[in-house]
Length: 166
Picture (tube, rainbow, N blue to C red):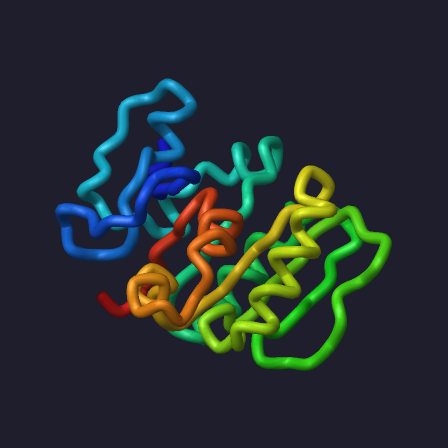
């Protein structure tokens, strides 16, 4: 059973009653199972089989070392090809692509990179699973106006808190 939370447009992001992260419908509840949204999710509570079959966009938040370990654990379930893209890099995104995009360090992406990724996703969304990593809350950046809310909703289908700062 999963306790990871998700947010979907047009919901307005809001803090969870626990005071940690974004609050939305839980992945387990969306699949018709009972869930306790007050339990912060971790990789141990995420339904890995659902991730493999449904292929939702994942937003992973936590310390850099934990994020690397989590990506290594999940990597065998990613649809090939896998393309890594860093938020603060000036690298372009692939033109013809269906597979998995790992968007590393999403919180460091400047506005122009966020716009580029949002437009790219608009053309490829059904064919691409995006795994985003961040060491700080994207929700807080959305509230500050430093991260595009529309991109946040694309990336935050399933939110996994691996020790993200409140």
